[in-house]
Image (cartoon, rainbow, N blue to C red; front, top):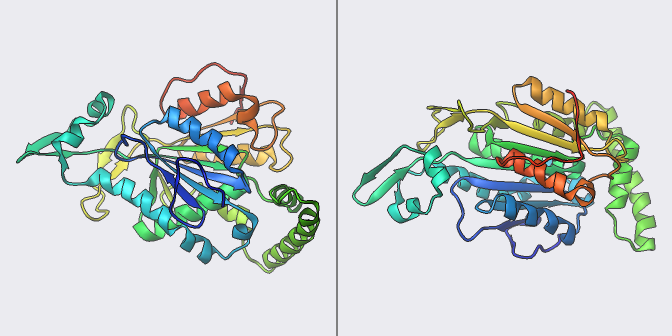
Length: 335
C-alpha cells in the first residue's frame, strides 16, 4: 500500500493521522478506491485536516488482491483499524478526565456537552462521538462494509455514525463496470496491464460462477451493509433534538439516539458506477430515516468530482460535517 505523508501505518493497508489537539470522539474514516495513489489520497486528507482540524483521520486503502481475498482475511486485516474506531468511541464514555484536558475542549464542544462535575480535581465529561465515513467507488464500499461488519462483531452493537459520504458509489457491480474499475487500478506498465486484463477476466468469471451457485454478489452485500440501520450502523448526528438513552452497551457506554446525515456525489458520465444505482441507495437510506441527499456534478469522471469541482466539493464536505455549505455548481437530485 502507498505511504501517505504525516500518516502512521497501523496495519497492512491502514494508516492514521492524529492532529496536535484531537477532540474526543471525532474521527474521519476514508475508504479509498481501488489502487488509489498516495498523491490523490493526500488531496482528501488535506481537505479533512481543514474541515475537521481536531478529528483523527483513518485511511483504509484498497487494491485488487484485497478485493478478491476471503471476507475472513479482509476483516482480520482491518483489526487495527477497528480497534482505533472503538478507542474513539470508548473515550466518549470514559468516567473521568483531567481538568486540564477538559479545559482544552473548544467552547462549542462545551456548550454541546454541558453535564460536567468535579471530584477531587477530576472532571467527568460526557462527549458524544462524531464519526464520518467517506467511501469511494466499490473498492471503498468493500472496505467500509467489512470494517462495519468487523466492528459489529467486536462491539456487539452498531457503529454510531454521524455522517456518511459516498463518492461514485455504491454500485451494483455489473461484470463490465467491475472489469473497468479493476483494470484502471492496475500499474501502467504495458506488459503488466495486458496480463492483468486476463487475470481480471479470470477473477470475474470465477466470481460470477460463485454467484450463480446461489451466493450473494459482494456488491449487494456492501449495499445492504451500508444501509443496515440498527445492525452495522446507527444514526448519531446530534443537532437540535438529539436524545440520549441508557443502552446497556457495556462499561458504562450509553446509546446515543439522533439523526444520521448522508450525502452521495456522482455524475451521469461515470463509466464505472451507474448513477441510478447511487440514487436508488440514497432513497433506501432516506426511507430508513436518514437525512440523505444525492448531488449530481456535471461532466466529472469516476471519483474525480473533487478535481473538477474543488470549491463545490469542499462545500459539500463542510456542510455535512457541520459548517455552512457554499453555493456551488451541483444539482441536488430529487429522491
